[in-house]
Length: 465
Image (cartoon, rainbow, N blue to C red; front, side, top):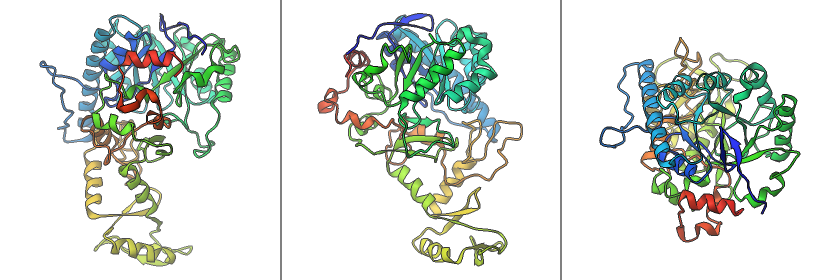
């Protein structure tokens, strides 16, 4: 394999190997500091990061506010305290090696406030800011105030062009690199556009080449591009390394660092990763962000698919073939459905799915009374973890609402990811993963359930495998 030389990123000479910044405690100061100590770039997630009391015990994130806005303020405070705690730990573990980045999701609730609060409390510890999950126009401005390099996450040249023309051109000297995250292969939230087919993955090479060509138009020919999503063995990316057509390329690993000794995820999650088979990761659109996301097809995700399949259209006044009356409860006016859908609705209700919940798209989904109560409680307990939430209809704007009906086809992502990260329930909550995670079970490096240290993993990656 071609030798990977050091690159200059965030003001330091580092290995072109970046740890992906997975949120909700899937990376922390220990895992990120260890990656930096190994010579690469460790990425501390500032998405609901854990904080600790004076005895080093994790502080559970309980919300006591009576209103969503009150709970949102609690969430922001937790986020700032957690981000500061994790970056201090990462700095300690790194011993000054490599570089440390902080990652935020632009569409998370209070993203700008949390980012600024964490940077205020960690001056001198952070070398770069990574940001995606949306169009982070203002991340360059915030990074500029703290004289930090910034790394936007995009999935197309078109997205980068929009960011550059609107804001990044004003702080070009601090653009440390551009992360290209493959929307068909990366884990977590993905940047598929409406014009792209989620079922037809595209070759990343021409897409990254188009990004490089766009960057060269702006005088960014030497600015690194970081390939993220689907990277496993570097021997499979030989034609990308030292390729003058692509220019400077680094590689980001999100899924592989999950299976390390320093990884903070529960043992049940690590064990499950070793059993995932090819095709077990599904690209779906159930996230309350409205983005596509990739997660393991476990009972939780299957339930969301089944819930949406039990769906029929309705209208409030009889018209255009909607002539069959239907009542969703013992009181209230009837609605109208297509006669052909009536037997389906009757069958679902006869099987115990007696609660018909309305969606923003003028459809009904059928769930059990227990599921309906859980959905309604989760919606009521919303703490504003997103800038806008389709599941609860929360918005961090002045009105506090998106103005649309809450969508019962989605789920509370804060509740789900907190449970997976801390309680390790791999069946009843969402389990994000990249599409290559089946390779844990096929890669001899993990034979017999071997879990390497971060240093051992980085050394292994440098061999090409």
